[in-house]
Every structure is written in C-alpha cells, then in structure tokens.
Length: 313
Image (cartoon, rainbow, N blue to C red):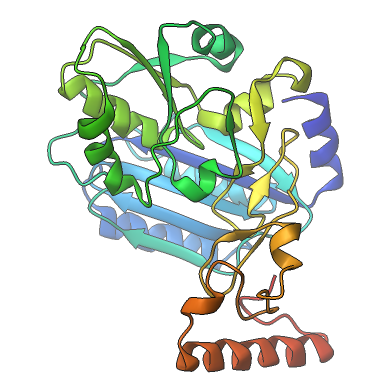
C-alpha cells in the first residue's frame, strides 16, 4: 500500500474490498445463507456473486466487520488464501447487501471456458509498463465501452463492447489469426481477464498475458510519475470512479440509465437531477420519467427530514 493510501485509510471510516477466486464450490446455497447472516448482523454492504465456479464480490464496511466475513470464508476449501483489493472512503458506497447465485461469476457466455485449467500469463504491475511498451504487443482493454471512455492505458484498443458477452464475437472478428502474436489484456480487478485469456488459450493463442490484480492493483503499486494509466477507473459502486490514488472521482451515476456523468454532462440542459442525463433524456418514456420524478421528490423529502432515502447519492 502506498503512503497516500495509508494516509487515506487513517482518515476514512469505511473499507472497500474487491475480491474473486475461481474455485469449485458445491453448496453455494448454504454459503449464500451464511454470508447473508454474517452481513445482516454487521454493517457490511455490497454485492457478492456465487457460482459453482467460484466467488466474486465487492463489499464495504468497518474493517473489523469485513475481517469477520473473510475469516468465515477462509474456512471453505479453496478460499483460505482469498486475496482482496482494498481501498477506503468516508461513506459506504453501497445501499444494501446482495448475495446472488449465478451460473458464472463473470458472464462470458462461452461453454467450457475454465480459468482453473488454462489461463494467460500473469504480469505484475511493476513490470506491466515494460510489456505493453513493446511494439509487437497488442494491448486490449476487455471492459465495456463506457468504462474505457473514463480511462484506460495509453495505446490500448477499445473493443467497444456493451457487455462482456460481446467480447468473444469481437475476438472472432478482430483478432489476428496469427496464434503466435503477443496479446496483453487488462480489466478492473482481474476477473474478466481470467475468462478472456482462458478464451484465447482455448482458441490456440500461445502468448497471452494479463495484468495481475487488474487496474486497481496497478494504481496501488505503480507511482503516478511512472504510470501509463490515463484518466479514472470505473468501479461498480456509488463512488463511480477512483483516481490514481484510489480516491473517489468526480463522476456521478445517472438514475435512469446508470451511465457515469461528468461535470460537463451535469451542466447540459438535458441533465435533470434525480431524473435523466444527456445520454438518456430523449429515450425516457412519459411513464418512466414520471416514476423518476416521484422518486426524486421522495429523495428531497427524505433529505428535508434529515433522513437518507435508499438510492440517493
């Protein structure tokens, strides 16, 4: 952890932990119930996805409460060494706790892709710059288009996907058929690259690399003056983005389309607080607009009473 993030942790009351692991889990229904009980008895909020292929989550709360949950998870075979990316903020960036059962903990939609069997070579953040600076390395951002638009590595390709399910089709249409080419990929915390590099290995590509721990690990480990990262990193909670110091960025989420909004977006005539933004203003039905306007009214009433309305920022 850098000096800046250590200072940040001393000043912030809420710890945010992002984690995942591909590991066989049998009784996911039982684990779901156990996690719910522990979180309901504490101040832990966030989202955890469980599937027979593993676990994926981002949660936030007092560090002692998070450690209690991770101590329980460590009792499960394969989760003893569950690693997590930790950052800090002054308020919990989640509104509720969700523990969901899924077919995949990150949805690629291609049968038979198993990162536990074959995956790309992990590249530590400290040597990532050296790899992606090589002229024969093709650098691909595996995240969705709106995420890439907020920040990415210098020289990275944007597949312009709307969801991770679109990535296999992009690979088929755009990746060179030369199976000896060098391909380096990255994502937010590393989990999407587990699946995307496993996909390329399944297709016969030999020199496949991915950023160990993802962008969040890179931002933590690589000093700003040595960084090849440009912009903010989108995160899947109400901080919306984090900057290079892993501090909360300046974006907000549109309540209608859930797209990140910049200061310029919020200055647009098509931005309506608690209702819409320039990206969705012309697409809202009268019924949807009326619903959002009523929700906004309830948020304002709750604020006037000194209460927090679920869903307000």
